Amino acid sequence: MSPLRSLHAALLMVAVIIIAITPVATAQDLTFSTITGRVVHGLEAESFDPSNVVVTLNVLEGITAFDPVSVAPAANGSFEFTVTPSSNHVYFIGVQYQGARYSETLTSTELQDEVVIQVYDTTHDTSVLQFTSYSVIVAGAVSSEGWIEIIERASVLNESGLTLVPDSSSESPAMLSFLRFALPPNAYNLDVRSNLVGGDIITVDRGFGLTTPVVPTNGEPHLFEFVYRLNYKEPTLDLSRTMRFGAESFRYVAPADTGSPIAPQLDDLGATELNGRFLRLLEVADIKPGQLVELSITNLPMPSALDRLRASANGWYVQYIAPAVVIATLVLIAFFNLRRRQVLPKLSPSNDATSVHEAILTRLTDIESRYRAGSLSKRRYDAYRDQIKEALVDLRIRTGSGDSSAE
Image (cartoon, rainbow, N blue to C red):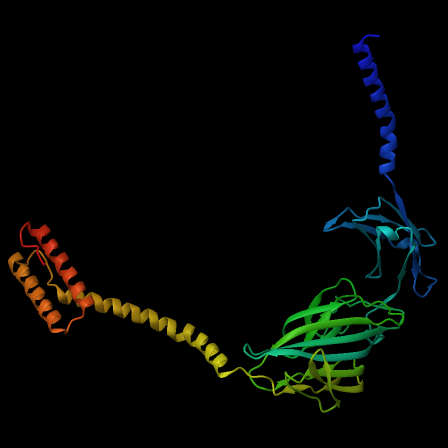
């Protein structure tokens, strides 16, 4: 066999081997996993029909979301999804039922675990909520800017077996079916956090409300935390509020280096040290729904005299000083223009060139005498001489004659 034919035969054999192993390699790369789960009613209601709900799978890779996939469960509530596992994927399985959304999250290592999603009937009645604890914590104050930061925390139980869903169709301005929290007047920079997913923050009378459905807790309370700021100009600030839902326990905490907490209805438990700060703790049990809790903080740090002067200067600068500077500048410009006109005689077509020339030289002599006598500064003297030179040059250009020497 010739060397050329041997080479062709070798290449043909390599091609056959590649074709033979390529499908095997592709099949090994394309592995699949099946997510299995069940939709069940939390109270095993006989009227619940799982086949009437829709289960949706959303896959997220970083900030990229793949197209969602939806299936209808079987009569017994079972469902399944076939996915391509990846360590970069997060899998969200959700069910919408009676206006509330229930969901579970899986990573690629949990795909073999059965997903059980419990759903509940819903209600608009907020009496299903129970505030087990409520805390108002003064975080600190910035005296130079005159604001104080407050943190509030609440633990809320819903042991009714019903999911609270706000009634957005209600025309009542109080929005009575919403989970609501009170805020002191003029609070700003509000930041709300909770372990519940979804929903919006809305402004309600004297506070804010949440559109998030509140699912049954089964012994584990929902946690809510929000932070806001208040401006102050006096050493005492009122933080009183009406506790719409009441609270089994209520705490008020303030650091000693920020101010003195005052709460007539609470028991003063003294001060304790935490992370190098002394905190004053006041507490009371059994706040009734709708009860007004009187809170205030006094002895707040006030801005120093220098801080007040800076703040006052900023306001005065914008309102008075800046406009005055502009006006003074315009007046000064007008004054110098006037002085310049007074230094040199005006040249017009009706003027006699000889008399104008003599007037300029007379003015130069006067300036020289004042400078030698010390009644005219060097800067002013040089400025006058420059003006006179310009006038003599201008006179010569206009008349074609005259002595332009001013040296």
